[in-house]
Image 1 (cartoon, rainbow, N blue to C red):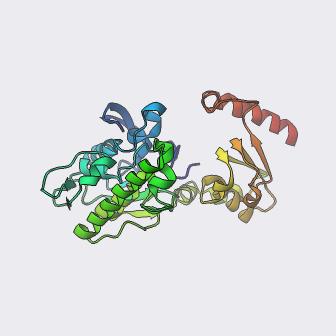
Image 2 (cartoon, one colour):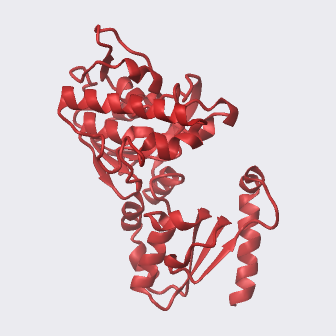
Length: 334
């Protein structure tokens, strides 16, 4: 299962028995990275995860720079998929290193960004401070007839106290209030120019702030539809029918806490399981388990870590930790 973030690409490719295409594209800080996307539905559709080309895991923690990071590589993946003749593209938003409002992605697909003097501006959030005009006349012809579906459960607007910069900027390297404010102001100007030039009000649209504002770009330039990533995959996987005869349901995520209830896959699976099969027991597994999870209706929650471990240690040993915990739970319930 997945909710539009980590694992979405792999889940859909496996579900549809699709295959992967690898590409060398621009990474978040301008370096070349090898990224993949999936072709599914007999080659009629593609699945692209933003994290493949523009992900935070592609950047060393000490090098994170939300003023400079760009989503250009994600646009290159989209363009490559378009060259394969796909009619639909499912975009998983999550795990990004960027805060550029999707400007890099859009630029790779032919959207032009100029300053007030008509000069082309560069990539990254910092360049948005120079933005004066946007032109969409030269969007790549292969893109114009593709239907984009954005898979995300993030409802944050583009700017403001609940926006991309304030809520997600700090984890991407925005280490000071001044830097967060700078990022947010640049996205406010971006939204203003989009409205003035295209008549699309992206600023407070729910989900526009997803993935550093990538949601805003898909809304403004490609008239894309937003759907709950978790609900989309639950439906495609026909999870409802599979839950009818279950005695136990295992679900989880990296951190099970108060945020889990806000549309994340663990809460969605739990709710559906209890709805269609009230007698089944739902067991949650997480790297970190908080105390404030009473509202989730999970019958039992276990941490996969077996003692004091760093996040890096947990990630490196995740497979073995899950196997060992699963064995212990099996002994308990048999």
